[in-house]
Image (cartoon, rainbow, N blue to C red; front, side):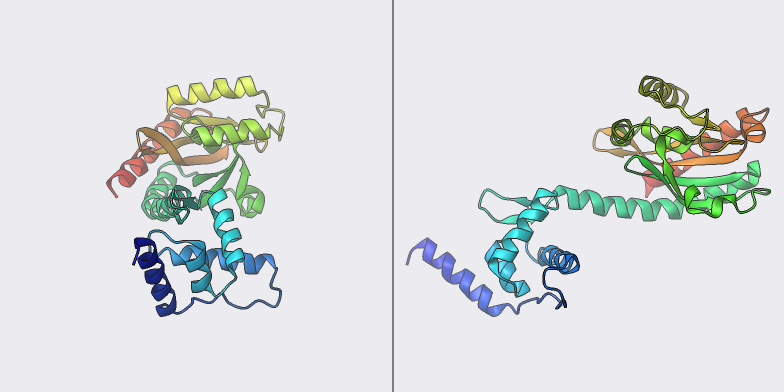
Length: 280
C-alpha cells in the first residue's frame, strides 16, 4: 500500500471516529448570525489540532465542504487563520494579537484601579484610564473628582476622537497604528482650540514624545482641560502605548498654577502602571 493510500485511510478513520461538532441551528440559514456561529465553531476546531483541512472541518461541524471552504478562506483573509503550504489551515497571528490584547486589557484594569484611586486622592480631580480603539479613545475606567456633577456620565465622554484629547495624543505619540488611524480619518473641529492641521498635529506628537506627557487645553469641551501620560509595554523590539492615564478638570485647576504638580502626578501614575504590567 502506498503512503498516499495510508494517509487517506488514516484520515478516513479519523473522520469516522470523531463525532461532528454541529453548528447550532438558525431560523435563517443565510443570516449573519449563523455565519458568525460557524466562524466561531471553525476556530474552536483548532483547539485540539494545530492544522486542519476543509474536509475535516466540514465533517466536525456538520456543514457542507463548500461552506467550510468559504469560512476558512474568509477567516484567513482577516488574519485569524493562516493557510499552510500543504493547503490546510492553522491559527493566525491576528487571533493571537486579539487574545493578547484582551488579556492585556483585563490585566490593565486590575493593576490600574488602585493607581487611579491614589491619583484622584492626591489631585482631587477626575482620573481616567483610556485605551485606543482605532482613531478613538475609549475610557474604560473613570474615578470622578469633586464638583464635576454628571457631565461625564454621557456616552459623549465614554468614547471620543483621539486627536482632541490628551489621552489620545499621549497614546498616538507612542502608538504608530493609532497615529495613522487618526491622520487617515481626519480632524473634526470640536472647539475653536481643537488642532485640525495634520502638520501641527505631527509636531505635537513629537513634543509629547520628548516631554513624556500630553495636554489638551479645551480642545474637546470649552472650560475643561486634561493632562495624560502613556502606559507603555514592550512588544517585540518596540515600546508601544497600550493605554493612557489622564486627569481632567477645569482649565484653571489642571493647567493653571497646579500644572507642574498635575503633570508630575500623571506621569508617575502612568509609569507605575507600565511597571506593574511589565512584572505581570
